[in-house]
Amino acid sequence: MRKIKLLIEYDGTQYHGWQVQPHAPTLQEVIQEKIMVMTRHPVHLLASGRTDAGVHALGQVACFMTPTRIPVSGFRHGLNSLLPRDIRIRSAEETDPAFHPQYAAKRKTYLYRILNSEAPSAVYRNFSWHIPLSLDVPAMQEAAGTLIGAHDFSSFQGADADGMTTVREVFRAEWRGDKGKFLSFTIAANGFLKHMVRNIVGTLVDVGKGRTSGDEFRRILTARDRRLAGPTAPPQGLFLLEVTY
Amino acid sequence: MRKIKLLIEYDGTQYHGWQVQPHAPTLQEVIQEKIMVMTRHPVHLLASGRTDAGVHALGQVACFMTPTRIPVSGFRHGLNSLLPRDIRIRSAEETDPAFHPQYAAKRKTYLYRILNSEAPSAVYRNFSWHIPLSLDVPAMQEAAGTLIGAHDFSSFQGADADGMTTVREVFRAEWRGDKGKFLSFTIAANGFLKHMVRNIVGTLVDVGKGRTSGDEFRRILTARDRRLAGPTAPPQGLFLLEVTY
Image (cartoon, rainbow over all chains, first blue to last red; front, side, top):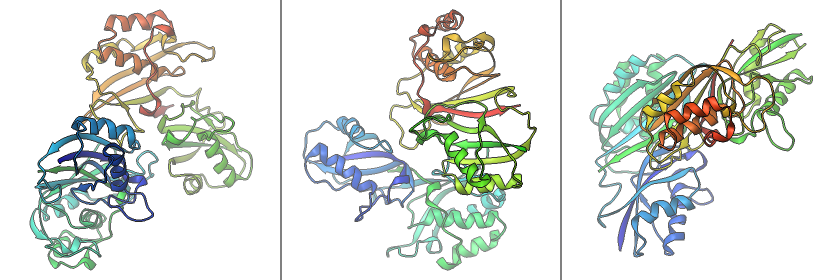
């Protein structure tokens, strides 16, 4: 048996997220199905983590076991010829059978993109959150700085998340004005709770609009109470950039 | 009668280009139809120029006449609520009834985007030309420099273009390496022949691959013979950025 590790890019617009669910196309299901066309045996594709419906990935990592002798390079070319064009295998390599793409992850990096312009965009509609109001980016950056370090992020956890520890360590949380009217938020941590990035972004946008002060943002973080945080930012601005092992 | 000038952004992926044609959805047709929902009279929407199937625009300009008293600001909001999300009206303003969006244009600027990476992209598949071979960008830039000024661009004209002069003046022709593996070509001129940008890009890519030398590129330009130029670059990398009056 070999374990194959895939680096996957996808446009999540047309999918109901990563995880298989009944009656809705998901990324895991579509990719598993194409792997099975190649291997002719059932496979279970395990990812570094789920992504929500509409969320994109430039560097999702997922693994499966196979007893076949298909050369590992064949999986990239073979799957790319079978998969729809909104899913691309960037690379395929053989990895240690004990490797677990979620538990072995040391660092995950997400990007959230905001289009901060009066008019909405046709070209970027599926790849950004359009906010027509002007935002105080320095205030958003200052508040984001309080996320750095190990914290209990319960305040930014999605409602129906499951147990386990809610402490995560954030290594980087940075707003950058891209060319034109795009704002990009890059956040790296040793792991993320359900909806954590989108809840953080929604709350930081409240800071940018002047609805929430920097002090209030800090209090929301330390309160460990989801009811205090701002709205969940919409999924289409979010990209899983990289998983580091 | 008032003349209304629209600034339009579109994702051209789902359309058979700008110009109305039977049995295929076009941008002109879809936008005209929604204007008619508002004005309740037939309108003819005249653009700064056609764009091909799959080509995008961040700043297309188009005009129509109307006897209605709808406030001009109402067209932006009204049309954006009627139009599909891959077409957005960036602004609407009243203009001189004599204004002609094509003949009054002093300068048009296009951007062509190449994804120069080994693996193809899922997220950018409809917004770039994927070229896995490594490209000699300095050679492409040097060749692009010979385009500057007034030239007869017949060598880069699409096969079934119609008469008129084939002389155009190019003000700017510049390759830039964007972050990551994107290459962007910006070209500005007082006007463009049919397929001119895509044929220039296809031929410059041949220069980047070492198939065509800088001297040969110059000879292709001066030969005024379409058969000498390289392939037509695919439409999805092309964006009409701006029309200047």
